[in-house]
Image (cartoon, rainbow, N blue to C red; front, side, top):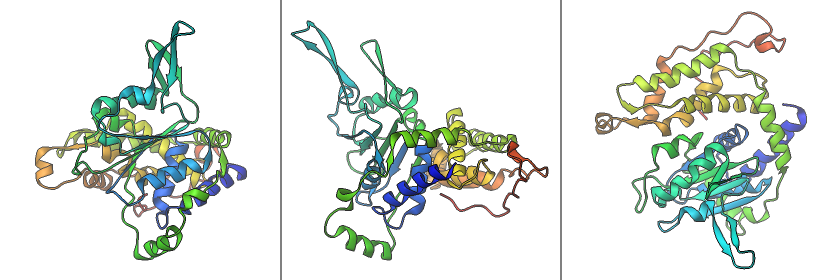
Length: 337
């Protein structure tokens, strides 16, 4: 990315981190998903800042933002919109729903019924909504940032597999450290920092960033490495449902965005390794025996990462056609995002 685009990313990152203290890796993953044209699922217990993270990311960008509070009585038409009869025109008029925004915040998405959750499927994958036979295009950039409570919580419905598969990554905010929590008391004890948060980037700048990420080069060994990782989930004995080809595509796009955020014009196995747990784990379904043995999808992904050979660094110069020598791939597993 150019210096101007790098400055835009830094402004957005600093803006979000000013609200979410002590969680730089969570903020980085959120920006990675945004630049990779994906959707983000934030899952954790109540009160750790899931909605605040979603709002901070949305408010840092000067674009249209809509928030949907998912409840058991929410209807699909509340999300997509509805055609209403206009007495004066003697015709139906379409009233757009909350999905018609550039950043859509779905709060507690798993409190709505599966029927209502399914209203998001077309918009998240094809970036369009079809109502009464008419297709309406959604604005660009378009991102759904959804929060959900763990399925063990009261009054929640598990997300359908097709719904989970459309989220590029799942992140858990987690409890803050003692120091970050003390700082939070100072910052949030009076006025919420969200009230003073101003946009630091325009939508057209985000589109330029997305275009730059599309141009990041991914060498054939790195692509094959991503395919091998996803393929291993489909044959693992502890999983009854592996990751889909869409997961492979999401993993590749996220790796390209991560490389761009690191100032590189090419992706490395580091990027794939670091993002694999966040991109793959929420799509996997453990077997009944694995659940009895308390084996989580995250543990299975970590095991696959340990078993899958990392491609060797190419020796020739001009890696990725960029006219430079490729850096050596690290021998130690990279820090997880």
